[in-house]
Image 1: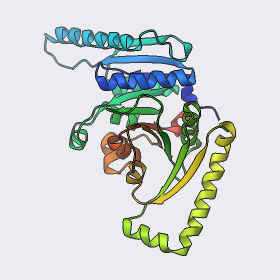
Image 2 (image 1 turned 120 degrees about the horizontal axis):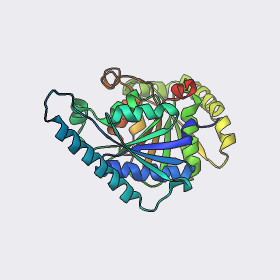
Image 3 (image 1 turned 90 degrees about the horizontal axis):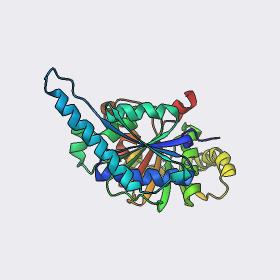
Image 4 (image 1 turned 60 degrees about the horizontal axis):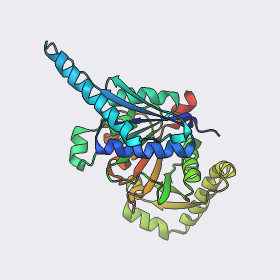
Amino acid sequence: MSIPWYQGIVVGVDGSQESLAALDWAARTANLHGVHLTVVVTYAVPITPDPGIGGLIGDLRDQAHAAAMAARARLGEQRPGEQGVEVVVVQGSAAHELGQRSRTGDLVVVGRRGLAAFDRAVLGSTSSELAATAPGTVAVVPAGATAGDPRRIRVGVGRKDEPDVLGVAFAEANVRDRSLEVLHVMDADPISARLLELDPVAASWREAATADLASRMARWSQKYPRVTCSIVLRRGDRPSVLLQDLTCDDLVVVGGRQHQPVMGRVLRSVSDAVLRSAPCTVVVVHAHQHAAA
């Protein structure tokens, strides 16, 4: 029942305020779990036959090192987890380089700029690409989200979610001394949902679903006896229900599967939809990949 990514935490920084906020969240999380923190700054080199590309590469490299210095200044004398902080500058795309590091089982943390919904859909982002394609667990900290401990922690679970999703949620609730809301959503349109709630059979569905969730939660409750949790069952559109009444002071944990970012929107990936709209930090757990690693 160990959580593989507690071996270390990696955070991507590019010098923006959003990435520095992600650095704050990552440092706090590394300190709570007592693990090593690595700060990664990347710079992508454009492929072009232009002979003047050398000067551009030098500028990009200088900007990356400036971002690394800003990260060091932000951390100051902090030693998250009572360990040294490693700051590295590497050449390559941020999503690829950070995704490769997630293969080792580390939690990768990135910020998310406050783009409008249309801009995010058209332009995409490092955070959405990383959360969709990385083999490991990814935390996305949006602009305006709290870097401190959350007001509450919500975990979305399906009928076949792997135990790592609950494990990550329990571990976070334990170290942050917060209660845990375990939310299970059955798809249904508003009219059907209302009719089902009036149907006596719905009561038996709730009892069966509650018993199933309680059984799956039992192993984690034994490991983290201090965590108090509640089971919430709802019907409706899964992303909408998961996002309901969230604030910047919350934390959401969801399961995810590797896919191309565009396909995530076409296929209505729950984790993709939650990431694009959540006002708070979202942790996407790719548990099946960790098991393989």
